[in-house]
Length: 90
Image (cartoon, rainbow, N blue to C red):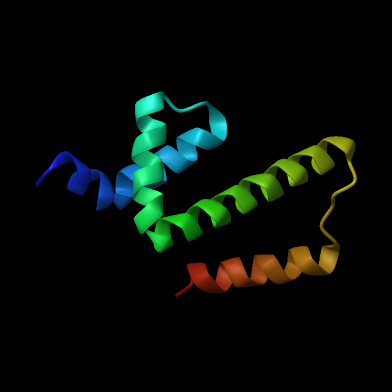
């Protein structure tokens, strides 16, 4: 399989590069490789959007927790505990 075909059909590498890109810059080669793959893979494009959204949400939750503005209410905690116990008892 040619080099272009390997890049085009390697979703595992593309998702790795998408995650890497969220934390540090990609090399020139990695950027080209990712762009080629994303041009033909709608699943990885969607993964990239969802991953970025999740990262943003986690960062916001972390910032809110540092300020002390984010707390779970007691009823939610109890419900969550019950669900966890149900799953463990299966």
